[in-house]
Length: 417
Image 1 (cartoon, rainbow, N blue to C red):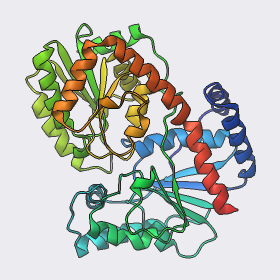
Image 2 (image 1 turned 120 degrees about the vertical axis):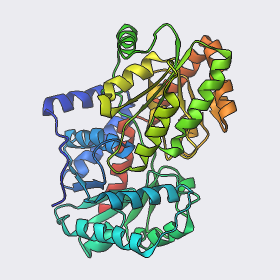
Image 3 (image 1 turned 120 degrees about the horizontal axis):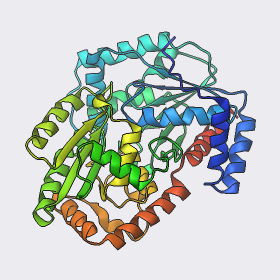
């Protein structure tokens, strides 16, 4: 069998969290969740992806699965096997689906299909619904052959303008699924003749360590302990070290801001994912850029920076940046808004849908515009506060975990009849 990721927690704690969610969501949503859980109690669900840490999918599943289990639904999370060369190819697929170019040769095609075929052989036949995330395991459905189960492919990428060679290679495998899910309709892969297409935005868990309430005093002390000066303004970007997240562009914007506001600091915080070999190269470039500047800080999970530290920095900073060039959704935007923080972000993919009405001027297309909005917000603390409060309410209504669970359970119910 493919390796299973354990996400089980004490039943009492999980049930207590379900009760706490009910204080944040509408009675209508709460009742629908309970009804769906009763109807799907005998359905066995398996989520499949390529890594247990470092990426948005892994972060989602680590919170999503316990909630399903607390609702009484049987759900597991399994990982496909793959050597480093495989993940080099699938990272290129990821970039190509987001609009980058990739010359897909026969050796790369064969490697991709071999790994998927071996993983399919090790999968077993213990589930009623398989949910496959992103391109790495997308050919699993093809190699499992006829089964009674329903299959869903969940794409977390902005695939609206993909490289035609890569999308053409993947399309036949994706069309074998019973349903495909994209964050928004604009992301639907061109040419995909799906049996059923659904559009479901991701969500954050407000009760996770990364989002739990923390006092400002604790945040200031923890930030100071990391070497950052709590008396100076602080900008923070939290993301993987990925060219599409544009960390080098963030550094450029910070340097422009510093010309107007000398006492400003920048912290870049990122997790290194097991299926992203490209990230190590970019991390080296970022650290090289940061060397010699006492007001620039680079933190990663390699040095023990985890969910609590991310929470501390997001709550303790003055402005959050997410200067993505392409973005499937960008969970960190909702995380920052949940903490009532002002966010300057790239007008890309699923980011705009997270913005509260009236604050769209903080969605930017360039380094210069990014710097301009940061300076404006640093000089107008009242506007920062209004922006953050509006952001939190928008996230509460639209981007919390119970809504995501409800939407996906609705789809599963439609598929299993």
